[in-house]
Image (tube, rainbow, N blue to C red):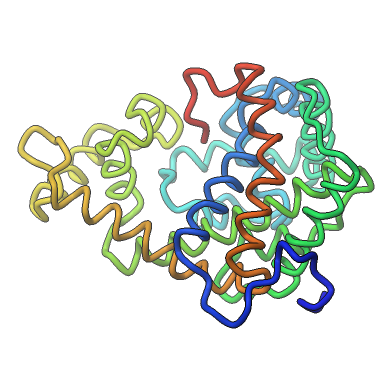
Amino acid sequence: MHLDALPDSARTGDGPTDVNAVRAVSRAVSAAHLFMYLAPETTEEAAELGVTDRGPAYLAFRSAAMGAVPWQVTLAAFYNFSPRAVRAMAGVWDAAPPERWQAARFLAAGRAMRRVDVHLTDDHLAEARSLIDPVVAGADYAGKVLAAANASVALPSDPLVALWQQITVAREWRGDAHLVVLADNGLGPCDCLVLHTATGRLSTALARATRQWNDEEWSAATARLVARGWLDSNAMVTEAGSAARERIEVETDEHCAALWAPIGNAGARRFASLIAPITNAFTAAGTFQGENGL
């Protein structure tokens, strides 16, 4: 879609996309996507496919768009999971092919959003699509494996779920970009997770349970961060560590400015506002209580 065809809320002139607008829309996108990994409908749909373990089900649902890839490919795309955590998904494609996992994912998303009464008017749905569609269509997918895979998935007929899938593409695009920034800053899969938990953005218990790094690996990553001055001797984040973590977020935002360029600052902020009812409905339903997600 040409920019001239976008609503007035998306017109921005010729200036660069502001990183503050990028941060705002990125947070909104991440929040609107998150319920998928916490809603009971996801667990129920996985059980219908014969997988009752939450870890392998999560890995199958999230990687299904890539097709029946070996677990090693999922490990590479997910970055901060340990090999032993991802190896547990071996056999999920025998339980059901990726196409059925993808269909079940859409079914779970639709069921969950209607259970919590996500309310978006037809006009708001149409406006949200008029903003996110040119973002997805105009994105550069080089090096963006999970985003590219999700962009290749045919959109479902359900308008609300179709919007959610477009949100998913944007969410995974930022995630793919973030991995590039992590690697460029010399933060390996376990190291980035240890730093993330030290800043309080993810509970250590949940990180250890889901990513399954063992004590030796966790301690080695902690020692590397201490040597960099990013953690102190008690494994608490230092001022330098907090600054480094924020710098990584800013670098990711800067990378993502190109993603949102088709709709600019006003369009990005408007899209964030339009999809807020998704997050609000799941928050009101208690979906996120005590959970940080996967």
